[in-house]
Image (cartoon, rainbow, N blue to C red; front, side, top):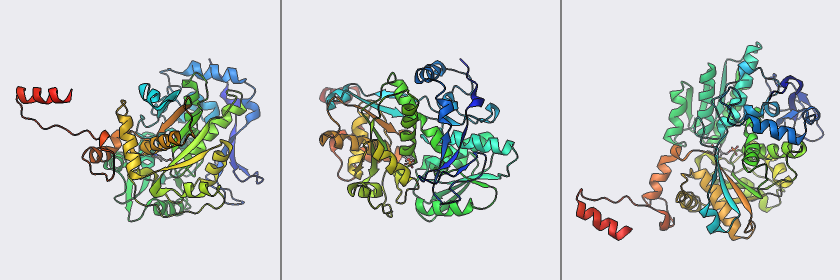
Length: 446
Ligand SMILES: *Cc1c(COP(=O)(O)O)cnc(C)c1O
């Protein structure tokens, strides 16, 4: 099934209500020139609604399972909603998206839920959902370079996963990349990814917020393009998570989505995906959203308790969920808007809670990273509080692959994380290579 993509258009628009400033997607710009607010990619919804909701669903369903570029990507199979005007030859894709919606089956039953699904966004080329947004951003940069724009390099600050994604997609496209990481605050796997892809990697003696401050200044200079999620191109790719989830549930909207948040681009993207599906008639209701934060880095939770009345950035404390160790989230205004619209809540998880939740769910076949642990812990707390009701259908967003966080999982099973629940710790049994000793243990354990 083919659709003439050229008739659809999109542009940057200021997110500040009442401003209305717009800019072409080919312009190097991250915030509004008039009021400094973040931009969003704004689609011509009138043109998109020339197709019915049913027609869009049919089109998206028809592209699932395609082996052919670019529809073999879960992002570009929705290209009319993402970057409608990009030329196909400039798309930089590594087959991102189309991730599994893991049905926890017996675990959901034990929790009394109608369903508990884990959207495996981290099962992706570089092992985190950051690939979903980065394919869009790097593709647009590739298009701009092809159009003659002077871009020497792309750059980002990162808590680990953004840099891995940027490094890979930039290397694929042959665009130099510069990475700013907080020294000693990312996992070994995360650190070595951009090193392997040939990025210029700078480890700064600060935290993520400090790196963000530096990269903003660097990218004000000519020729270095900012790849953090304050660049709203990223949001366009990440929003397809919402579409995939609904599509995987047979175009049914779950009651709840629980998502871990740091810089708060991801929850904004999730909301935007649902808004577009709602506005274009693919769905007729919205889910509730829970934004889950590590207790050690939870400025939005503090604001939520005050009805979002006065958000205050904090200095984030160390957390095992290192990718969300962020105290001054760039997309906080977008996130609050989405949470209000989606009857949302914010929940927190302590270090012990996030560790136990990740490893409790591992017992059902998952292999959870600490951020997914934060979302799972929030889910359990909301069930306990009765906010998530029995019989609800819940989707937890898993943001990274557990294999990127081996240290976390080893520490847990070695009882090195304080105050965790010993029920989920699984000790390796040391045993002589002797059959009677082995049988003795099997007798005792099985
Ligand atoms: C980036 C990231 C998040 C948070 O996403 P934001 O858009 O910054 O809120 C959560 N988990 C992991 C693993 C991440 O890499």
